[in-house]
Length: 261
Ligand code: F6R
Image (cartoon, rainbow, N blue to C red; front, side, top):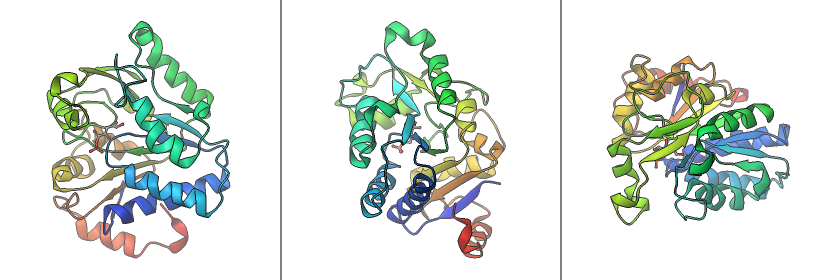
């Protein structure tokens, strides 16, 4: 089952992720981190950067693979995921930029970029822990509803809703690209640990569908139910439509201290 942790705040959730990643890096200096953009992981990255500094962790061998990239935007655009990952993860954590990968959204190579990316993840030994956000429509990465649950990295057309959700990062809706290249759900499920973060009431329906609804390509995040080690960390607002809330809280309260996430 997916483990659901109801954190007191976004800050507390970020610290849970950061503590787990710091311990992963300490035990495996060349750990492979699966990275996401968007608002949900930002606090988690800040906490991880603080752990790296406070514990003097050697991150020189840490590798990273981002989930997705806009097609045709160009890596130099400040809202490209290449630039975003650099700004929010690579620089604050002090990772080697050569070891941090983002799918290639360049139009000239888009037909082979997906397969190349999956091959690069495999060559790195697979992702140790993939951090995820969730869209209001249940998407993970840019796998919109209807995405195959065994898909590999490929190009996807974005829903108008997703473009609307993301227009806050651009000056107008017209500027938001219509296509993205994203790790597939099959790619995401190959990571050894999945950690999904969601905050706020607007995410509550998607979280309820993902965790307690049926497994369906129409709620791509429901694929987490197929994963042997998936952790969903939410605040009270994002958890507010879960039916089994008391059980999740009970399970976390009675968890052995050594278990971690
Ligand atoms: C980002 C990504 C998306 C976001 C999702 C939630 O790389 O793949 O799936 O995680 O759209 O976005 P936020 O966190 O901004 O609500």
